[in-house]
Image (tube, rainbow, N blue to C red; front, top):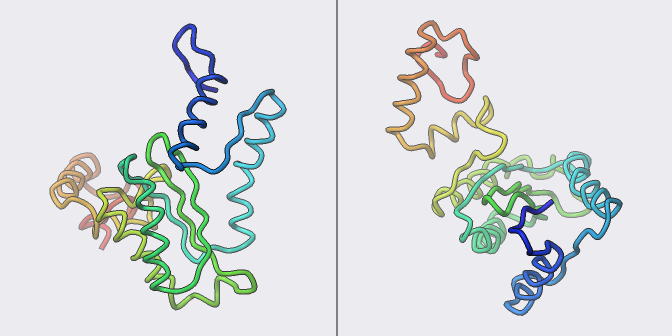
Length: 189
C-alpha cells in the first residue's frame, strides 16, 4: 500500500514514476498490483526469496544499508569487486526506500557453497569493505547479534562503540544480560 496526498491516485503516480524511470534507463520492467490477488502474488514471490536462498546455499549473505543515492553505484561496484574474488551469482533485493539491501552471494549453477568455503571470508570482507567505503552500515534490518560483533568492531565508529560499552556497563555491570551479543565487553572475555 502507498500513502498518497488527497486527490492523487496511487496507480497514476506509480505509472508516472515507472515511465520516468524507464525514460531515464533506471529500470527495464515493473509491475503494479491491480487487485488483492495481484498483491498477494507479489508478496508470495517476495516472501519466497529467503527460502529459495536457503535451498541454493549462499556463500555469504549480507544485511547492509547504504545512503539511498548510492545504492545503484553499490550494486554495480559490488559486482565488479566480487568478480576479482571469484565467479558468483548475486541476489540483491531489499527496502530501497530506506537503503537497506539483502546482498547475497551464491555459487554458479552446478557448484555448491562448499566449493567456495575458502573464499567466504574474502567475499564478506569485499562486500563489507565497499559498504563501509560508501558510508553504509554492515548491519541493517536484522541487527548485529552475535554473528556481526567482529564486523561492528572493525567498521564501527570507535567513539560510538565506547559509548555503547559504557551504557552496557552501567546497565549490566556483571555482563549477565545477553552476553556476547552486539558488542564484546570485558566480562565476555
